[in-house]
Image 1 (tube, rainbow, N blue to C red):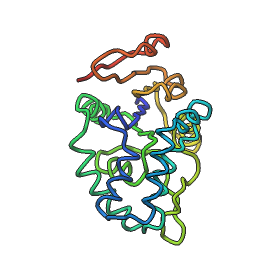
Image 2: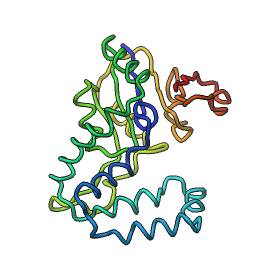
Image 3: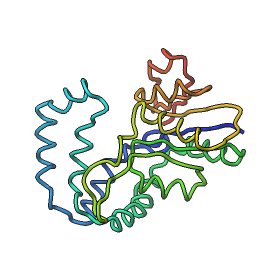
Length: 222
């Protein structure tokens, strides 16, 4: 049995899902309580403050944090409801089919398939349950008294945090596997790709130079 790890955004689906989910919730709920944060985010982006912060503190991800703050106070029940609808309206119509089919092939072959994503756990959970994924790790939205706090629960599931969570999971679960395989589109997942015995970089339409630089295999899709 092989241990197979998939990134989610731009690996299994063709978009970045975290901010889009928050925007989907705001739009469908018509939730404008913290709309002013949208304008703060926009100003900081235009003045390049966020890009400078991202350069020096890549794991901080301030734009993503400001986006999540816009749904502060929303109930956990509504987040769960919108996660199901987001899965139906956004995730399934935007699958990268060659990669989704590859994931299904691994599952049918009896491999142990996991998802690690910087997307939010409510809709990653829906996807994982519906597609026989053994387990997933994603950025957790923090709740207090059943309401969104506007913060992450723990660290953002990006960069080295993915391998930290994966190694903790493997330490706590006795999984007998013969090979470790990882799929991701992003250089931010270098720790995960280098951890694998066999790593595949997922690229849209053209090759990414860094894939060859690190000696990874590459899957190019339309």
